[in-house]
Length: 372
Image (cartoon, rainbow, N blue to C red; front, top):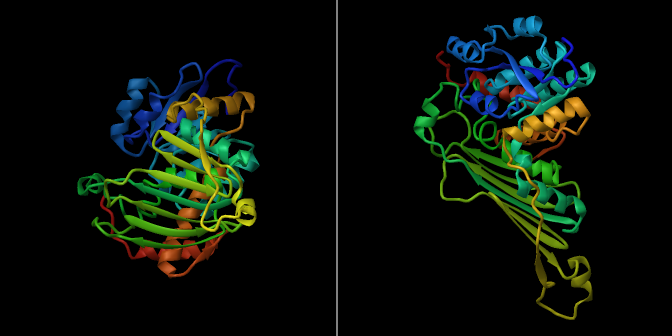
């Protein structure tokens, strides 16, 4: 990697520049912090984007890494390519920002993390929703212990998708092209927020279904979870439903938190139920509760927040908001749900990597052939 002068923008190169999501990245970077120096994609139409930026275009990402030696590599390819490209970039000496999900199966994420640790490079994942003001506020409330001991978690999220959506690319909704359905494409942000706020459960049982769409992979998932401290919870995600607002509820012995898109409400009990239920003279009663104001930090929860955080991490040693280890949790959770449903039994964490890879290999072998 070439040396970037102090105070100069970090030199960033992208792999997957032909993807539509690349536009979100290119318009989110601060020119004072990042300078695009090269673009790579196997699709020739992406060359026009390189020409628009006045930078070299490559169809081989390894050649781009060798020629340009960028400080940072952004990966916006379909997710089956995340792991090998990220490992190549880390080996070339670059820091990496990869789109969600971090990879397709958790063993790939393990390899990415091991490479990042060995090379001393940062591996960040584009989970920008962690920067949503209500999410940051919720994290502080949970971490402060104000809710008491965690008892129950409930998350419901729908991402409506149509036939036309799945027809836009032959890899959508296939085991070979995505390695999963709603759990690997739409829901990773939600799974990440769940793990970010309350951690990875100890075990779960899940039911994955394809209820609406003509796809190989799941479009609807229902999951029951248990955490190491005994808390339980449920999760429902779907691309085959509509009219259901996004909601996350966290209940503790001393309070309750509810998150909606753009909103947060917190209620604290007058007395922790562990004490109230023992000491009260009432028969049918719970402690009174009071709504409390929550200060919302200033952030947008968008790609610009991710880039500002990455720049601060590289240049000033700031903590990475969503690093590889954090991002691995949501992938492991998704893999666990698929494994539980297909094996028709509960699974525990850490997930058996070999068992999941064997299942994924079987599902891919039985899937549809993809046209180019």
